[in-house]
Image 1 (tube, rainbow, N blue to C red):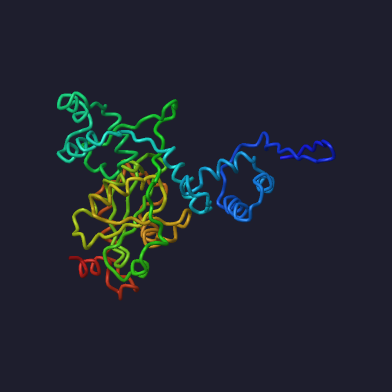
Image 2: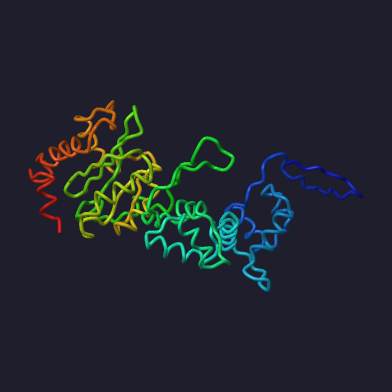
Length: 342
């Protein structure tokens, strides 16, 4: 920003020149606080704009938008910020399937075991005024309703992004509850039934393993998976933990890898809660890191998992779970787990 000065009849007039060619940025909460202070002290808008390096029209628009109601001229920074955030969310959000009747139909048929292809084909026959295609249903489930993933008969093929030839965009891990919000009794291992999960990959192929450990007893479960992907991770966890009662599986702690993107679907199937470590803080799930480290003694990092059978993995896991641990009072993880399992 710079100021051009004109002199007319001995009066100096300063004219605002907007920032150029810098990219426009949204007002911050700190700037809104400054606008609020200026408003309360009857500071001229042009003076506030100059102080913030903004156009006066930006300030006028903000004062108009940020008022609680048309008849109330009072401007409050925090409420204005909340309205701005709400507008931003509303502007970016686009429902893939906005029709509530179609949504209800899809959910009902998915629970009956129907595939998206069957649902889309039958929808038009049951109600000619309602239409959608199976690809839209898949996208809606994958991106907006991951809790419905467990109802899919088969995992859908990979999709390409629009305008991209490189393949499917990696799923983001949404709706995370960070480890800082995890209850203290879980942190202290006071309660049984809380798990940590992670994967180990091989360089030679896409095959990997999913490993999960019960935090209190250090009891380990491992399953071979086709790839380090969200669908495979979800499926393996459901198979491993699904055979135990609800009391034995109350929460799972993950890292932020995209293979954990379907944690909501896992929660829906297992009735668990999910927690996530802070980025690059793998030590926050130290139990599973330790168990995978022990697994690596049997299967070094150069191991090609596609050549290893589930039976071989089970044999090693049984040996690890049968090894006494000092912190368990020299009981084995298996003995500790069986004693607490219900």
